[in-house]
Image 1: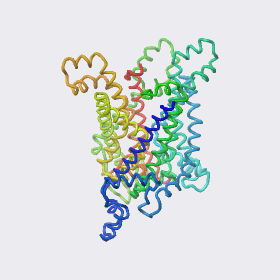
Image 2: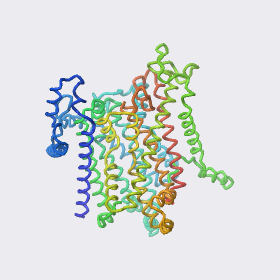
Image 3: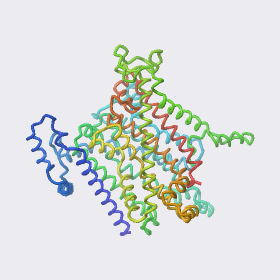
Image 4: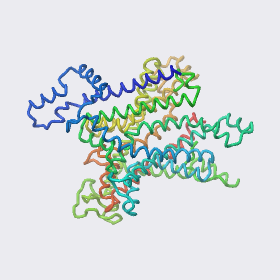
Length: 311
Length: 292
């Protein structure tokens, strides 16, 4: 088990290393930040001063070295626009994003998993077909279209909810619904197919044949096994808590990390983009790590055979 | 496996079994999906000759004209540009981007997968680690970061979309090639002296194509959604060019006064992704040998 955890930790560290290198390389390849940030007619002395202040005159390997040291110390640079710490700017936005994403995650799990399990247990029933249509709908309707349809119905026609902004809890309802419905559809589809696969296994037939009630078969044998693939999807959803609402936050003018990312990309505020990239990647890596551990808990085969068993 | 789109055909008598088998072979939803995609394809190819106006033509006297009139079938937008003409060009651009990106991603991913399967050892480890890395970052964030760093041109944008999903092809192609290599036919052509390139392209690729094509039908709608999402945010296809996501993005401002500006492109996106998904599900049920 320890060996299993260590190998997963090593892979997590490697991924973070890749992300940092990636962001460093693109940051430097993307052209001279001094020329991007300063206006074209800035005096040459100002550009030189800017270069020195940001360490852009050092050789590239030294910059890479400094960059790693700085990142490890939490020095992630300053916003090239207003000079505030990029990390602070991003952290300020995290609560607003979580305020949307956590309720949305509850909606996703609360609707998606029961719907998927029910659909699998009643395969080809009317409810199954309803769930599957809902799932296809979740895969094919882009979130911004769903968001705009909800605004059109609930804000414009019915006048029940505000169209955008973040002044009260009522402003959060439509964004949470948009995120929740789409995610629930994805989760329902995964849960259903995972359940169906398990229900077709010989050990389910054995369990029924030895006289267990159907509900015991489902509870003891089917659900825990079907949980394994579902956990992967769930892990991805938890991992994208920070950045999963880019489009939805933009539609509803919600002041979260996603909205900040879009604005920073338009302004080419590279430090802020880079902080978000690193934060998102770290959250994702942590979530994946947790998923791997959960795998080990749910499936003894994985922790007993660490070599290549996860592939 | 998933018969999402198959219409209800359960409770039928024996007399209907003939129609039943025919419906299973080619369900109505699949026919409709194929029809819709053919229509989109024709629009994309012959689009410019169908357009009543140039898609950038501004007519300030006819701003926000309502749809279903003889002058403007789908109305006009805030600058008096014909929504139908813009829709035609948007379909063309969106399909072009998604189609090229799917091809790039499939080629690139399959190639890496085959290389990993052929060389094993450290090249395989590199490919698998890169695939893990790609899968562990939400692609939208990755794409936004690249666009922030490099700016945006149509070529760069298509290449960027072409990165999407490569890791899935790579993993599938690697797995299939490894198992194919242990099968008789690959060993036989190798014994006959065929070069590795010939074995992979002429023998293993055709034998694994069905699974890869099914993956393409799964990735294609996701690329359409990704492209339209980025364009919706104003960070994808740049004006004066237009795409389906762009039209929805600009139409959003006129949601209350002129909903037709965004309804036409939005429903086009939904119908197209839906059609590809229906066909993909159907193909997967019929073709994918790993499910049988």
